[in-house]
Length: 274
View 1 (tube, rainbow, N blue to C red):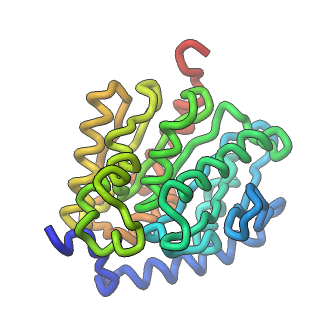
View 2: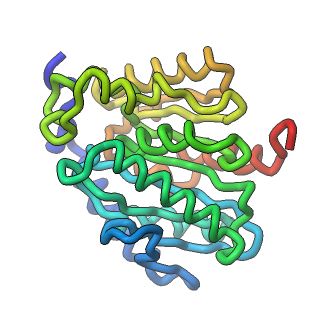
């Protein structure tokens, strides 16, 4: 259905949420030990911000949204304010953007950022067995794609917020103006057709006030994961729109924050076979 993937930027709460995240992200720049614009690759946008939390700590690697063509890591630093005092590192990378960069190459950037975190975990006090992936919107798509490319012992959990997991419906929508997908490439880049290892615990969530298309993407992907054997937690955060729910990643007591806390606690129990 045309327009169902339009993000209603004029919806009450959208602009306010973005402003709040930007303000809260500026507070994060004062966290001791924070490192900015760390290179995980040679390209200008292959940079990440890292907020270490001590020695032997878990880490949350967050991929931000922006329909694969917009956005900066600088206004997604804010969750570090809540997580670092809890002994959890927060890491947020930029990645190259469409249309100058193809979606497969954007996925490669996301994968490269995780490669870097794994390779440099010890140097930054991160427990390499406790790296948790999280993303929202296009970033949830990236996180889901990355999770299919790593063995389960490399990723402790996957939390997907308001994501796009089947790109075939986008072929006739505005985002394909910059993605330039066809049936074959859309299927190849759709997480619903490339599921992560069945051992991986996954949270799939969205806002209760989001469009029907985004809510349907979440519910159908959760069903596919359950059929694959993954432990799945699927919920809608009441009253939240596509922008407001992002704030929950750094707001204690909210459904998304609580889901991350559960993953972090469960992650301390080794996967079977480890």
